[in-house]
Structures are given as C-alpha cells and as structure tokens.
Image (cartoon, rainbow, N blue to C red; front, side):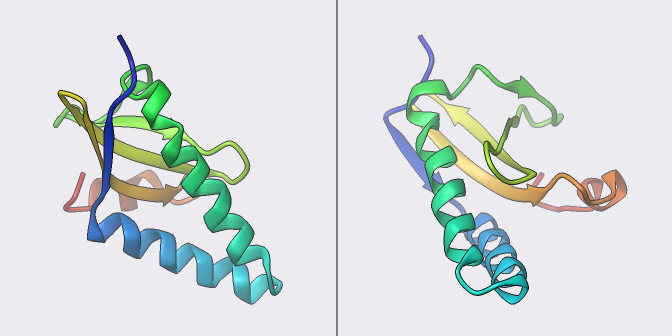
Length: 103
C-alpha cells in the first residue's frame, strides 16, 4: 500500500520553500503565494502517493516532482510517516544537489 498518514517538513525544507517564495515574489507580486500553494498541494499529495516515486539518494530518499513549478520534493518514508528533507529547483546544477548535507 502506498501513501502515508503523516507528513513532517524539516526546517531545511521549509527554508527551501521560503527562499523560492521570495524568488518568485520578486518576479511578480502574488506568484510567491501561488508557488507555495502549489508546492504544499504537491506535498499533501504524498498522503496518497508516498513511496511510488523513484529513490534517488543513497539514504533511500524518494523524489517527487512538482506539478506546476520545476521543483523536486525529496522525502523519506518510514512506516506511515513521510519526512520532507528538501524542496529544490530542478534547474540547479546537480553538483549543488550533491553538496546538500540534508540529502
């Protein structure tokens, strides 16, 4: 069975979301809020789909792709709990991703 009963968003992932919010908000007022609403909807969808995504990290982290913005949600699934480790722009260099201590 896929999905989870609870979702925890780490401080690092919250910082990722906030940084992206400000990036989009500086592009045009209101886009930052739309970004957050979209990504939180994608994170909430893990309640149904957690565990079906590809494992991409040696620590067993899964990667779910955002539905409206080019962002990836990296999470661990332990029992019925998903822990979001990072929310990262997929347009960034793969080298930058490898340097992330949370992944």
